[in-house]
Length: 386
Ligand SMILES: Cc1cc2nc3c(=O)[nH]c(=O)nc-3n(C[C@H](O)[C@H](O)[C@H](O)COP(=O)(O)OP(=O)(O)OC[C@H]3O[C@@H](n4cnc5c(N)ncnc54)[C@H](O)[C@@H]3O)c2cc1C
Image: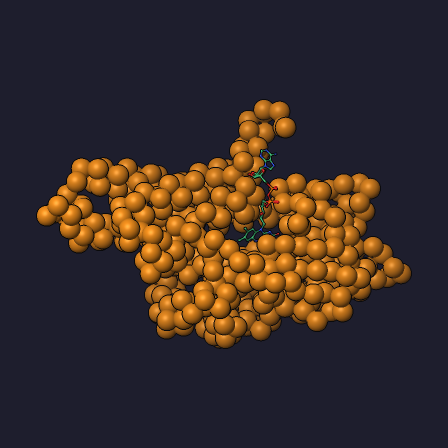
């Protein structure tokens, strides 16, 4: 196995500290959270107290001024442990960066420290019941009324949606000009007309409070337009700029989960006896695991290279799409093969491999489906769009 060189001693100390946090504050409760359909809010506040939220945000806004690798280490630990209910990554590394990169000074000061402390939970709402892949086709509107905007529409499948105190809502401010008429709004819990729908029942991610959100004549002042007037009708550009990092995060968690399940399966097949010998003795078992380990190793090297590109601001959309599509396809392949090697126990939810199998499936769907990733890659090759 190739030794990873990207983490320095500071990252390593962080990983150890976060692992202890998982053992104390997450692992003992995750099964109960899966049964109730959401994580307890207290885990957010505890994470904030320990500096485990918004680590890459500047200290001036409550963060730790860390590089992205602290967040990477955190997402890998959560994915490896199968703690899919805990939506820290989306909060800290998808929602917070929009505020940091595009927000006004007032918006950064109002929201980022509250997010870093865990007092405010963040979500981003792009997808609608009628539109997911075709983001240009969203129907939610923000219509000017004097200085204010009135938001109308509905969103679905929103991660952290039920807990969310702050939602970045993708709206059309000028529907006549298509994608160019898109803006991002900061909608807070409790604003009149903003309602949360039900928590959605899912194949996996059972403890994740994925929800519907409804906006019925939600009146917001101009200060709720992300980035202020200068960012009006520039929301689509912001989305396109942020998506490569968002997609790489999915690849990172895919590889971490796949490696963890391979490790668990290696243990299992050494212990489980069939026909008088461990399952590990069969050539099929050994070759299957050897093949999967090889592919996961290749994926890890690719992901780490993408992280290097990210650190140098060179990660382009097509490369991030390759990572997302290939690593999540591989994740699902690994999960399926490892469930098979567990036999009937691989179908029992008491086994982590079974829950990780169910959790894996959505990785090929959200953040842009893997088919959309192939569209983006093929376009970068000069091939015509659909
Ligand atoms: C658990 C979960 C969490 C999520 N979290 C969030 C969130 O926090 N925020 C948010 O905004 N969204 C979120 N999503 C939504 C997610 O990003 C969308 O589901 C995804 O983008 C796909 O959109 P869709 O469901 O409308 O599928 P559709 O767009 O209807 O796609 C249906 C099928 O058509 C295929 N297809 C579509 N276009 C093309 C094309 N051009 N070429 C070939 N095939 C095509 C797709 O690949 C897919 O197989 C989440 C979804 C899930 C399930």
